[in-house]
Length: 149
Image (cartoon, rainbow, N blue to C red; front, side, top):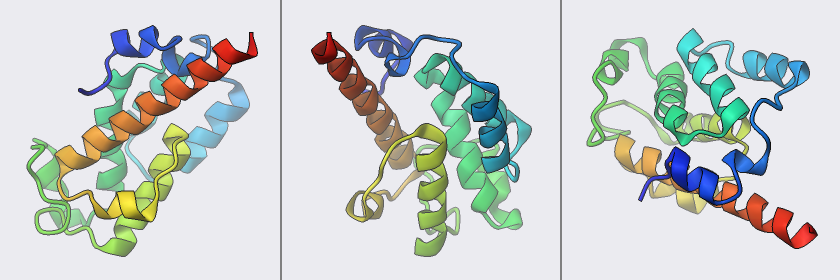
């Protein structure tokens, strides 16, 4: 089940960090990292970092993928379908996938292994996988906060 604002809250709050704690330095770095993505991608990432709300993840995922796609294939993401195949429909090769994953790791503060990356076949796979990683990270941070008390 994909994470929601409610499940995120249930595991100790969005990313287990109070909403609104997002420094100017973090914002500048995020803006720099996403400078070649659309403004809406940056805005979704900024909101995600401020709130931890997983509702912003689809916009971030689509924006990061679109940034690395060939211009003639970008139209496919205007009406994104979870069944879109990353290789066949979107033209993403293994090197491009690695670049997408590295940017997603940086923006979302997650870690993705090569084995995990190889299992992503469709846009839906990517969305569900990243949402799961973000929720797992939130749970880990919540558990660490509880054990530190």
